[in-house]
Image (tube, rainbow, N blue to C red; front, side, top):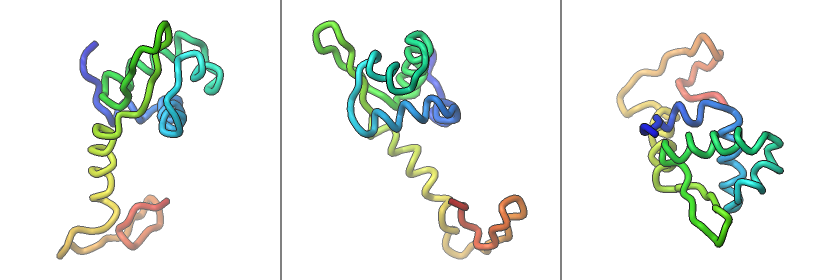
Length: 108
């Protein structure tokens, strides 16, 4: 599978739900299927995309495969997003007409 852009990987709400669950604790595919209430093939596809983007790791425990968040690669995404939370030093802020935000910061 070719490498997936991490931003494309997190664009899908179901993939973000899986990341949220894996952030709380490592889980097997069957545990994820039960929690996200998607089919096993759909959940496996989500995990494949997240693995290809480097956002999740996996390890074998007997016959089970346990997935967890890859904090190192996810931190790179978070760091990139954080640089847009406050304006760069010396830059002028402009009103954000789409969100009614005149501070130049992201709306939460």
